[in-house]
Length: 300
Image (tube, rainbow, N blue to C red; front, side):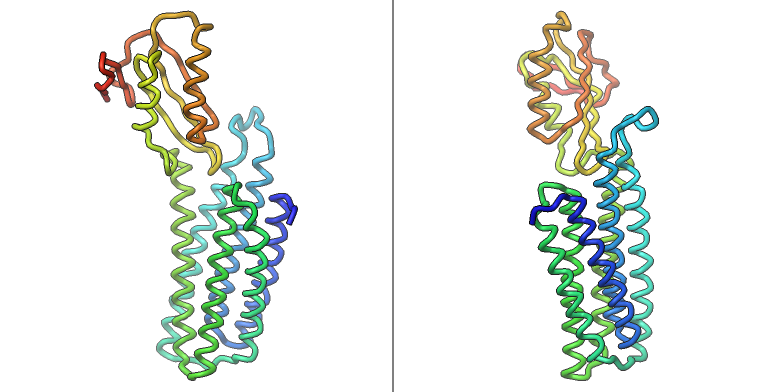
């Protein structure tokens, strides 16, 4: 399917909203908590897809004098709000599940099942739409949300079958609890990842010590300090450091700069800021690493 990222997300968002309204109506008519719980999960997917669509649009907006780094973090703020919403929805699901454990209610299976099956089919379509965009982390994140909702839809259908065949009414609140757990675990991931970026923690998968060591082991490098690695968004990792070199002309540092940038580029670091110095490394700097003859002594 030859669609742009924006079109994939918009089409998926449209399908998700249709499924949400259908499941809310079906859940109210059939009195199915599992279906209403899944509708809550579908709503969180709509938020996730909407955020992904916003991020895709904002990422194309150029930097300006008001935002020299661009506007990508607007999507992160929305992601944290979305994550808090996931917790709130889960709490309501758990409360309702508890009440239905105490007092089970009848479920209109003939109304519930067609809507649940239709929701599953819609989720499968979205999985197919989004599965070809995994080179884009934004699309991959949206795909994982939809995949989780597909599993929830399967849970709703299984609970309906159990109630229909056995009459065991507790299958419905049990499915509601399981879906609530899926939602709250998704909320934890969203808030945790967005908070890490906001606090400018080292992105996952990057080892500061290893990167500093790779650079300091280059023959032309005498030491490295004030090393910082952070991320503005999921796809844009930044790096800055002070590099200690022998006293030389600035024009002679081109090959070394290229070596360091190539090394960092292999690690998927796209924004690089290097400051070359010919003075001795300050002992109080962050990750101050000074060469000895065998290049094995590191001072922090």
